[in-house]
Amino acid sequence: MAGEPQADCLFCKIVTGEVPATIVRETDTTVAFRDINPQAPTHVLVIPKVHYRDAADLAAGDPQAMADVLREAGEVAAQEKVDEHGYRIVFNTGAGAGQTVWHTHAHVLGGRGFNWPPG
Ligand code: AMP
Ligand code: ZN
Image (cartoon, rainbow, N blue to C red; front, side):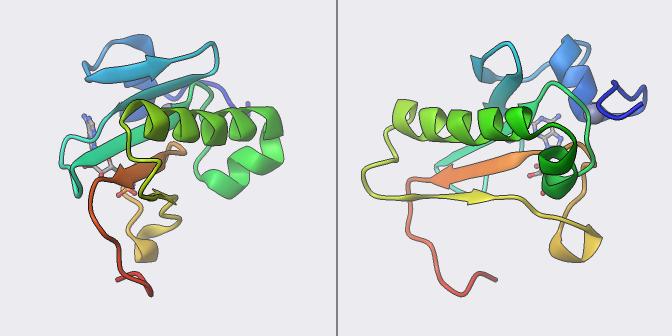
């Protein structure tokens, strides 16, 4: 069923605590933890506790959870003090765009400058 935990999903296991992570914030509906391979001084992943494969699927299937993820991305940026200088929220969607984990996650990146267009 849509949103149900998936036995083979790494981020579902972070939600349950089966896989450890450096958690920086948690709410009833979301978990935020440090990326294991940081691409910026601040690199935190915000995930919904429900399992959807990407951002668009989450928005379609559980719009409140998507809103919660985005609100938490802002809270992480404030907590990490990267909000003043600007930060980036990234949802890689599809293998061709670099998605490797098929549980919706927002990358919150900050603490350095960012180019546009992105690489
Ligand atoms: P993406 O490539 O957009 O799907 O992002 C997946 C992200 O998850 C990558 O930036 C990885 O470094 C990160 N990642 C993979 N495994 C873990 C883990 N066990 N704990 C924290 N971050 C992870
Ligand atoms: Zn999952």
